[in-house]
Image (cartoon, rainbow, N blue to C red; front, top):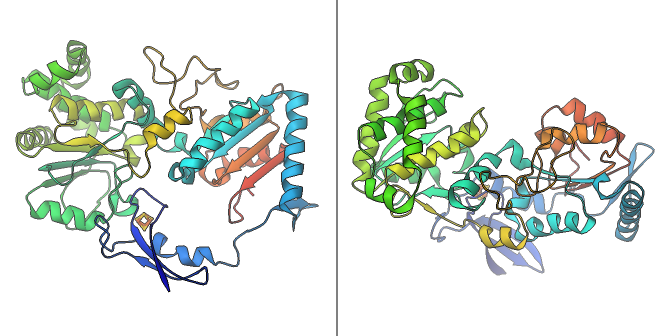
Length: 434
Ligand code: SF4
């Protein structure tokens, strides 16, 4: 029996696993207790991968829908028929008649990330959609403006910070999305044990026994952040040296923060977090900044509200003006794969355009006139791009995604997909879209 050391690719946790193999078959698959980061931790999804590997329901060959029923076909037939149809549509209606949607797993595969977009560029179509517009495109848009790259996302320095302010996130479910840190419960307990204060800002209770909770009214985090930023600037509590050295435009920030963040009584009413608590959170954060550092981290809840992009900016602004970016508090981590270089190689960075993080130099979408972000348009317009005549999409390639389930307006999207001349779903299970 041979032991192979590997890791789980389902989420950013990247938990270490061991596969025991005999005669080219995996007999056992379990969490690696000696892995330096995950230390034997794994969740049910990772542990189930052996069942997935040998699941008889897995699709291992192409299937074609004929008269409402799927039948097995050869790879040669699938590649030829799909290729012929794409070519015919491209020649008859232009490359824009072909669209692509890719799902979240693409983000965990460097080759898929590069080649899905490369394939569409080869065809000459920019009609690409992804799960990002339902999830985290706000972060990528903000990062382009703030740091100069869509894929520079800072993460909390869990080993050293003395204060962790978690907005709109449940790491026990998400395993600290973007942070690449498994064992969330153990990690947070260890942090509390060494004296780090953990504060949850969330409409829901996140933990029974870890941290302090403040139950915010949904979708009001941006007001809280403006109040906190203004409180720091107005009281001269910012890290002046850090700001002077690494930024420009602080006076503009002062004006904006004052306009939206001056009235803490009003902000307390809107957010349902008392003025005293807001002030205490800021002061505790600043106190910790003088020691090991402090961090605000926001995820799903802050990434999907009305002000998601502005909020991603405000979170980093607060981290920044308190001196908590890079030298302490938060740092840049390339994560599971070297996403910065891969984004450059694959042309996934939005173009440099003064004043905007999104690629206005490229074609705007036909429907809604939206610019693209990292080469993708919002998935919410996909149905209308298929249904609206003249230059509409006539073929969709769906890679590792199930847009009928994960995109808005399932009924409309279903109607649109049924109207396509070709729909190719690349997945190893039959999903709703397929
Ligand atoms: S936490 Fe993420 S990386 Fe770890 S086993 Fe679960 S799915 Fe895999």
